Image 1 (tube, helix red, strand yellow):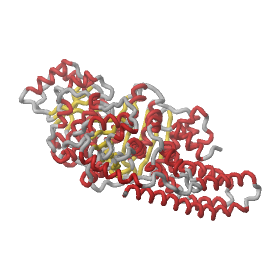
Image 2 (cartoon, rainbow, N blue to C red; image 1 turned 45 degrees about the vertical axis):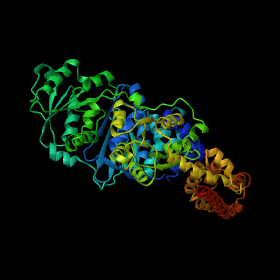
Image 3 (cartoon, rainbow, N blue to C red; image 1 turned 90 degrees about the vertical axis):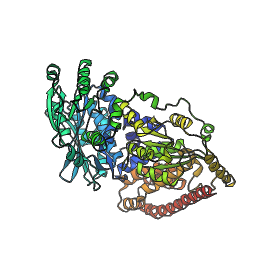
Image 4 (cartoon, rainbow, N blue to C red; image 1 turned 135 degrees about the vertical axis):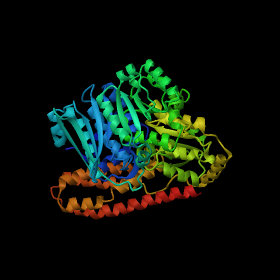
Length: 634
């Protein structure tokens, strides 16, 4: 049987696909941190941060991350979200994505030219149910059996099973469950149940919109019955009375549209002739209807641009209730021109908004920005670590927060020179935070750079309309971050004054002189890529191993020597990760004892020895932290 550490390494290697590998390569500490993360998942000790987040934001991120295989396999992707679910849900969006993304990719890769549907519903007041389905895909019986009994997995299905088991463990750690069913009649479905938490702040605007729109007539012009039913369901949530007209009837009868409050249609169905007719109808003063155009995910740019001259607002499939709620609220409650702006402003080139670096920055390059105060809003722990590594520069102070609300608090208490922000975050997303920042005149010139997986033109346009200056894409690279700083961060007298204060630290000891027989700090810093990264790794490791003393005691007292051997191997790996010299030696000694002695009576001595060594390690870590504090205060 493989060791825990071995299983961790294998699982991480296979899980998450190419993008995850690219993200990992950006961080020098990724290996150690991801070993810890997999250990947390295997032992169900992951930190769940349940916070309200916008469901449509999560789904747009998902769409971007699965778009390559989706396009390669020529599938149609649909998100069916029941109206009871709401615009915001409460949960850990990062871990929810870690479950949904790989399983949707698994469904996509089963066949071609099918419909992949994510149906999100609420079961009573108990669960949010994410049902991921491909009704034409049937899994091999051997794979289904391997899902149930992973220890007998054939090599062919190893990656699929490890993906499923990891997702299942995350679901269980969140208090939920993950199951799979597959058959000729039902197709294949992964069903993830997440405990439902009531959003007591009730962020939905459905009631306001329904009060305003109730009973108003809207016309949907389309080709298929399915598209009509979706439009009737989604727009009907807001009280609109949806009527249907076939595209050929619209072509032949040229109907009067003055009786309709809103017209909804798909740009993919439209020809230049249709657009000319709609333009003429809208110019007629009798017609005061609003025209909403729905685009397909991989639609030709030319077709999308062609419809901008007639659209009051645009939606992009897969469309959900939350997307419709947002544009209707802007149009009819806030009476915002931003929605129309997405469609009808000047031609926008998304490529010009993206920052792409071509130079690997040197230490000297980055030190040009010494004295800068840089704020980063990012909820992903991996991306936080990457940004910390890149911006770990002498004289640069980094303010790292997990959502837009925390970003605003930092801006109100600190002098910030430039902001990098993720888009999809819990509590407050990056778009909303940017609008809040731009609403105050004191921040009108503050550079705001988005960090985003969103790559579609309409999504990048939304960033610009919110007030962002530019965007860098994920996975984050030092080249892109440096180019953004080079373009947007101006060196000011305030920055120079801050750096002058840092000069006083030069008289402090340059090296920490601790007990390397307990903790080899120099090796730890070198491996982690910096002092702050090493402290973070130390903190995370000690937290993960908080219960390890009791676990060791139980295994020794209970005589569970096979489990003890696996546990010991894991401890060697985790303590090697932080260069805890004394601990590594002790657990290697236990391993040798287990292998060479038939009598295990002396093992109990290691219970007290571990407690003693643990105390010495904690003291050494605290001493190192105190040294860093002294440097910071100098």
